[in-house]
Length: 270
Image 1 (cartoon, rainbow, N blue to C red):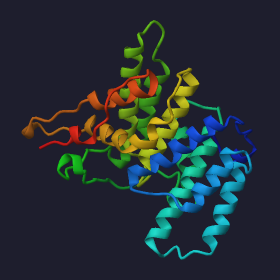
Image 2: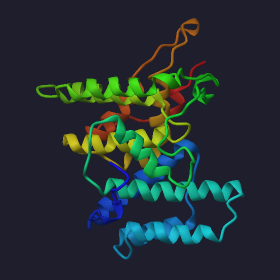
Image 3: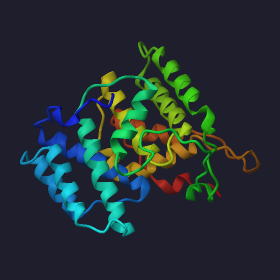
């Protein structure tokens, strides 16, 4: 990915079912930041699924729509973020190109959040904590800002030499879960990390040849994020340790027709 790529030139799928799944994933992912789409986006998405307008036209219409709105109103601002980021996720899902490189994360974030965050595509230059409800408002220990670049380089270089050949599906899914957990823990940006990670991993999985059930993100995006939280949280004093148990359930449903019940409540710690 680079600044010269124009995603609007990517030929969109004509498959209405596939388009609907893309929109389900894109809008569903906004749940991780408690964002909900406008009625207008739902209308435009439906027209896109029916083949009446293109992804590019959806984004152009959204820009015109929000020109008339008061973006100082937090609800309006949140809807704008949800609408535009959802549309851009669909645009990226229509594009089958992929490069296994940290720059992919950086440029994906830049593309999704341009005009929304002034730090779109820029690694954070400060350390962060996030109060997590499932952790009794404790936080995951994210990568220190000065190690972001080297941490991502390590994770991606390790993935590049990993051999999936001769592994069982269970073993493949276990490794994918570990890779996802590792790059998410770095949390390279101030906001938008889970959405960016999900898009990059989705495109990587398709690049590897996996059959991905995109519809799973429609209702279970928050579960996906909470599973990532639990895979990276340690509290020895409380006898709580990192576990991929919940992330594996999600990925087995996503990639292998798993039938796990995905219940956020089971991830809460006392």
